[in-house]
Length: 532
Image 1 (cartoon, one colour):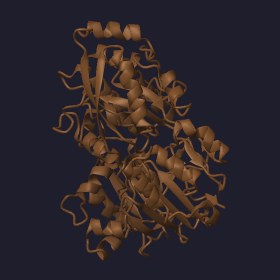
Image 2 (cartoon, helix red, strand yellow; image 1 turned 135 degrees about the vertical axis):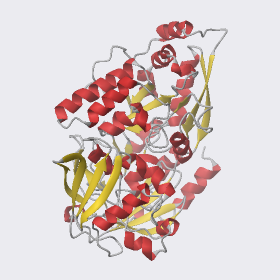
Image 3 (cartoon, rainbow, N blue to C red; image 1 turned 180 degrees about the horizontal axis):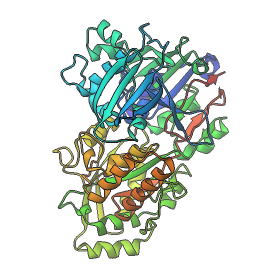
Image 4 (tube, helix red, strand yellow; image 1 turned 60 degrees about the vertical axis):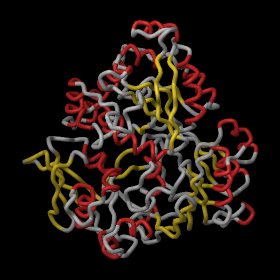
């Protein structure tokens, strides 16, 4: 049964996306899992899904992903920077040579001044362009920087605190906004969101918060091979899974994220395609490691990992997931050789709980912050209900605080020590694992405690810090793989998370949609897509 809000959201979609019989060939309607349109100013909120739909569509980063293959892992390639390299005399300094001939949607020229403007937005609180909200989103991509400067119109220098070979890969999440447009709208980021300007393959045509965003193709996009083949793309926030599924079956949209697991046969019978791929993404509980927290005890952490039947969870999801036994799958070069084997072993879990002082007369009560939907959150309500039942069998009683995805992210950025985070033993935030920092360092490095990073649980371990430093100073890819494998090994052996599954990012797509490539990535290139 649809909730009143879900029904309203579904009906709100009708005026903007025409039924299938009258669908324009150059118009593609997409139902997102989000409850609102991500911020449009080049610092999209709502997690990685915000970057997917409102970051890489209208904006470009200095370093971007090649999303053209469904079989090979996505790799980093030049974006608005054509090349980057360390200064031979001082390897803490990186030189970025910028792409020439690029225009923002407002007609102004992209150059070094635009890069400095966007850096000031995040890193210089004395700058007219400083944006506190934008900083909270973009700092995760820029935190290693201690200095930056313009060398000439198409060259900038970025400096890190020490040698940091990982830093350039972080810049895939740092998109460049237009300084000319910022001036035009009165140096006001709120006004900028109503009239945004990036360099990306799509431009904003219309925007209504919590209802829809309509993008139009940028025919002057600098990469002629990526000028969108569809004239319009309409994005609808439909967080309710039943509403999304109904919208596709009725022809209101052409594409939905995360269809209801029990609807797959019906969708296929209706002519829809179910697209999945093994993407670098994990769905865990991030645990509080603060002194005095029950989960500061490794016996409790290991018990929680042994309490869940992951194969049964995958079956519950109708195959729309892969069991997780670490941050990355066992066949990944970063997996390593953990001695703690994550499996379903409730007897061993009960034994560990008893050793930690818990039992029938003293059950562990634990509060977990979860979301209703959102970027990579998959099917959080039914998944967490399953976990609640499994944990109860080993003497752990979960209480959930259910909140909007963006509210959960904001709480996550405050950390477990904050007033907001203190009541929780864990948070259920999904994470992409596409690059070394996002896969590991942002969780285990003590430098990454909030608000600088994603170390929500305050992991503070000298060995982890040593490994993170070693990873950042290793430039050879094969040697870096070995260091990252040691990090994942230690994370599993210390059971710092409870790992459940890896996502396959299921999309249900109308048979009219052509040209879509489902990459091994959390992102997607909408440019080749046609509807007709």
